[in-house]
Length: 224
Image (tube, rainbow, N blue to C red; front, side, top):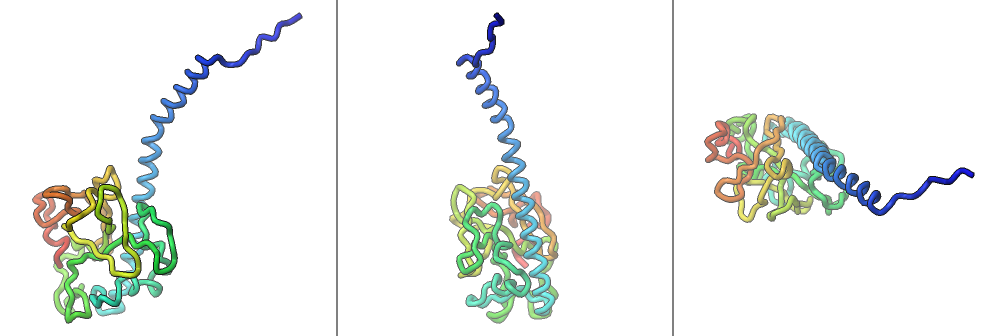
């Protein structure tokens, strides 16, 4: 009679297999998270570009003036729904809040707060038609993620109030949105977008500022 030689795994064999699976998973996890972060950064850049295209259409319809500085009219309300169809475009993929299409919608991007008002109702002029002209549109930051203060990536903006960003605020976020919190995306007045380094010098400081000697365009980035 032929003996049945089949048998189950021993505890040692199961332990070895589980150890191998754990090692392989630990090796794959950084690659997975990096890929996931790259996808979010790409979507973040896409959102900024869509906002930039909508902003350019608004500027064309308003003699090149950058939004209203009237506190009762937010820049988001000037873009949606005429130029942007849905609130979700204003939400960064790094913003973990629940999406919504009402007045609770997450707003993750902010307008450059150094945009200078003209007469209390208009913004800085691109073409100099209504007052001050932006010196260098390709260097002037128009929109960027508006992070909430704190050590983690978080946002707090909503359609209820205009969301703005500044090069240096306190308290501030302690890093960028991606690349181990060393980079952040920004949209410029000429509609191009870039991934830029977060500059932590002299405390948390937003992107490249006017004291950065490595950036020849630093003085144009925040002040028109």
